Structures are given as C-alpha cells and as structure tokens.
Length: 399
Image (tube, rainbow, N blue to C red; front, side, top):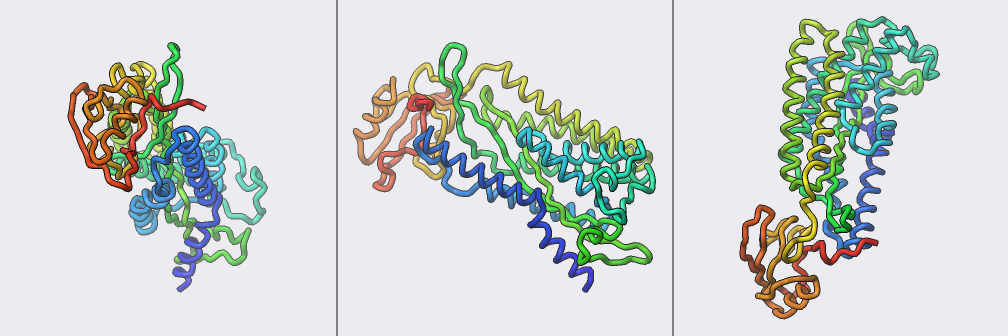
C-alpha cells in the first residue's frame, strides 16, 4: 500500500513541477500566436484544431511508458540533485528556443555538470543552499557520479531512438509559412518546425526524496535502503527551418543524421558495460553530434536556392488547409497553379475571377515541384463558399 501511495503521489506531483507547467504554457502560447498570425498575415486559419496541445501530451506517452518500465524494474536510479539540476538546465536552454530542448543536450549537460562538481569536490547541497540534512549520493565520491553519468547516457540514447520513431511516424505536416525578402526583393516562404512534446519518466531515487523539504513525502524501504518514486517531466523539442527543401525531404535527411548518431551512441553504450567511465565520452558525443546534425541541416538550407519563391508561371501554393477541396485534389505546398477553369493565370485577381466563373466545379492545371504537369478537378459545394482551402504566395502582403 505504501508503494501504491508513493506512485499516486508521484503522479499528482508530476503536474505541479516547473517543467510541466512551463511546457503547457509554451504550447498554449504557441497556439495563440499561430492563430493570431494566421488571421493577421494569412487572413485565414489553416489548422483549426489544438494540434500543439495534442502533440505535447500524446507523442511521448508510449516512449515514456516503455522507458519507465525499464527504469523501475531493471533498476536505473537517479539522484535528487540530478533532478533539480536537470530542470534548471532545461529552463536555461529554453532561452535558445526549442533547438536544444532534447535529452541529448539536457541530460548530457546535467550529468557532466554534476560530474564536474564531484571532481572538484564541490558540495551540491551547499552550492544551491539546500537543507543541511539533505541526502546527496554524490557525496559518496566519483564512483556514484560515474554511475549516474552512465545511466543518463543510456536514457538519453533511448530517448534519441524514440525521437527517430516520432520523426518517422509522427504527424510532422503541420507548419505555418513565414516570409522574408531575398536580396533581389522577392518574397519567399519559409517553414519553421518547432515540435515540443512531453515524455513522463518514472525514476527510482535513493534516499528520502524531498522529505527534508516536505515531511509528507512518501518513501518505501527495501532492506536497509530507502527509496522513493519520482515522475519526471522530460521536455523534448526540435527546431529547424525549411526554405530550400520540401519539409518531407528535410525530415528524411535529419532522420538519417539522427540514425547515424544513434548507431555510434549504441556502440559507445555497449562499451560502458566494461568501462563505465566511457559514458562521459558518450555524453560529449551526444552533445557534439546533436550540434552537427542541426548544423548540417542549416548548411543545406543556406547552400541551396529558395524552393518557395514566386512561380515563373502561375501562382505558388504555400499552404493547404486539411480536409479542404485543395487537399482532396492532391495539391501540396510548392505546387504552381497554371490554369483555373481553362483560364491561364498571371495574378491572384485572374484566379479569383476564374474560380467564381463556375459555381459548382473547379478544374486546375498544376505544375508539381518536380516539374510534372497534372490536371485535377473537384466539385464545389455550398459550404465551401468558393474557397478551395489553399493560400498562394502572390496573395500575401507582408504586414
């Protein structure tokens, strides 16, 4: 019963931890900014659902469940000082946006800082003005610090693998166009991907947990040792901009880079079974590798030409609303509408006139991004109000 109460309290305390609260605030602000931007800049809301909140709460459930089972039943404990420092590190890295909000950065930096504190014989409790009777396992010496470093490396690597699965199978199609002017004064569209999701992780913490702070904090005993469960909110995010590639192409290249990083990480992980100190090298590898993955993507985008600029002929599509006639017609961002209802298009006014010329039907001639010419058509119903559900670059006026 004591263990059950501990579990229930851990779940309840999960929702009042700083990272969970700040994560919820961030996704709510993200949704609010998106809707405001759509209405002001695009004059239409592309996505009407709460996909930011759903993504935040759902994407990490399965990885969190599987990894929590591994943590509890195989035995991968962390220390309370690590938990506190992790939340501090994550909050500081949020100052750089979502780019570095991933365990390959946050877990690695946290563990390396604690290892450095131990190496220089610095007391975490005194450094952060903790209660004098607060139990800090790192006071036992560098052996515990190395063990903790090994655990965080393994968990960070496993979460990297879960990110690969999310990128492969998750819904990464929801993005909003942003606009910039080239050196020649042409307006082009760019797409910034900023997914943020939450992974709830159960950990076993040796000692009395937060009891020095809160007397009611539940603990349980196994033999002569005391432990407490702790449900940690792990924030995971990415941030990358697409302007010279199709979003699907950019995602596939990032996937390949992350897979390469994970393969090297798995090799180092195998070596930690014989030499646990090599986990320090593994953490440094994850940090440097993560930087290189993001840097390679940035260089690709800077090296290649803009993909979503004005079309040489017709009108460039920069957004397609889900479940709209445009989506049913198979239209996608980057396509160029050459003709509408047998009218060759040169500007947005001709497109609107051609669309209104037939109140029940729409026929389009479209050039795909790869140059293929297709013909597509759809019926227009009363609830569509002559809106195909697409936005073209030519109708945008930057404000």
